[in-house]
Length: 194
Ligand code: G4P
Ligand code: NA
Ligand code: NA
Image (cartoon, rainbow, N blue to C red):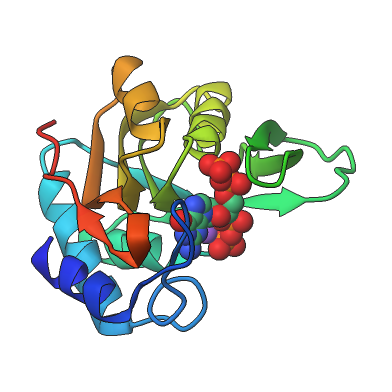
């Protein structure tokens, strides 16, 4: 997606060889106009997929997910992150292992909002090692729903997540794919055909 690439070039910062800072438009300050275009793009790509619901993870996935839900005319559910989980009726949980933080976080979602009648589009801001996406897929599986695909705003193609998900047979649509962040330079990979 050209507009997104332009934004990444102009406002993104390669913090290290593995981390891209995009807090000027995605992770802290949010650019609503860009999010709206991102929503339209995901909606166009998934228009024939009979999507009934969008599932994302708080917090940075919410903005692109809501814009996509608006265009597709479907509700958006965000999985919650919690330190300790009190047993609550109908709460589905899964664990996300973070390689960077080397810790496991539980995420949860109510079975009231996703069930076996749903075909779900997963949306997230970043795809790195894929652990967050896999945990979201696990929640959707546990709810008995189907995964239509995974829509990612920025994929770090030099990390394993994209390969992992595609190898499992999931459709993954990344609107920008970063090939490398070496030497403080942001290099893009070509968009993968899905
Ligand atoms: P991992 O693949 O290295 O294990 O990454 P991890 O799950 O630990 O990711 C931690 C957080 O950092 C996630 O957001 C993830 O989306 C984000 N992230 C991963 N790589 C990058 C990157 O290169 N740049 C930026 N800006 N973020 C990255 P989170 O903690 O869930 O935060 P948020 O959704 O509340 O913003
Ligand atoms: Na994030
Ligand atoms: Na996220």
